[in-house]
Length: 327
Image 1 (cartoon, rainbow, N blue to C red):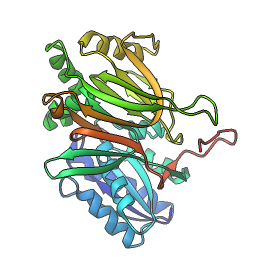
Image 2 (image 1 turned 60 degrees about the vertical axis):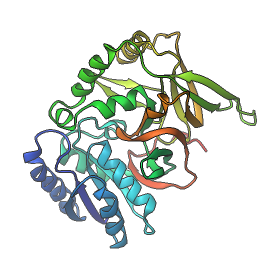
Image 3 (image 1 turned 180 degrees about the vertical axis):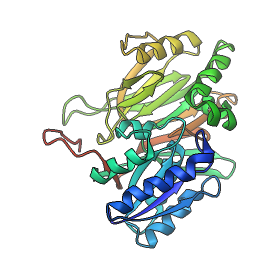
């Protein structure tokens, strides 16, 4: 890291009045280590995409997303659209910080900046999601997770102001309100299982579900503990969670099984490994089902999710000499 551009979202997370001060101190940590660091605040939803493209074109070798997963996602999309190479770094300042948690980054900005100085760039294939919006079919790159159905509706219904004030607890409150309805709308999903042995053909599957979530991270924050989900950013596949029921209780049952770390089997929930899936409506009601990527509500069905063949560079903890990277 020689020339870093720090992009921060002044409206992400809590205690926003101190955010500029925190970013300034993080930049000073980098400067003390000999890194040329500049700071820029986002100006609105989506602005970090263009700011990232401009910074990369200006010769910054590292673009550091200072905010939540939404800010990280915008910087990623800016890098994927840029013709100039740059590495993505993360300093957590949002309400969820799933990416930062998986990268083992502390919530303190100065400590996170110091840790980034020792991290190494790794080439990662991002996820890519296509979906429908009022403007037609859209495409978005993502890193940690994408979901269709109940979790995306949760993102859609959770008020921005409440999320900024209460963080992850805002989602729990909205989850409780959604549970009072008693059921969720169903839609169709088609996916291909990853082969268990090299050279074995993957099996194409179909199901009727109320939620499918694709996860690539292994460490998720869950109230007072870290949840391990059995996937890695460096593995070019997703861990799929498929909820084959519209009833609320299996969702709650599965949620507590994960949060407690006991991971007991929930009959109506399937887990699978895949590199691709497609979601289509069962009815006109199902066509209103939402999708999300990295915690950002995007659009509606039909939705297709896959692994992009292009790569981006991500600052990650030093690689274990004995670790294996999936092809």
